[in-house]
Amino acid sequence: MKTVTKKEVAKRVAKMMGEKIYVTEEFV
Image 1 (spheres, one colour):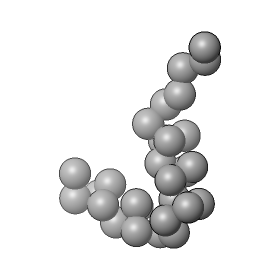
Image 2 (tube, one colour):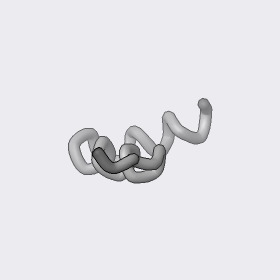
Image 3 (cartoon, helix red, strand yellow):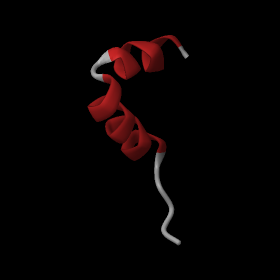
């Protein structure tokens, strides 16, 4: 099982949800 970084997860979610994830990431 390979480890996944937070940025890699964000990229995957970003592809599905669009750029909304990046806006959320900045406020968290």
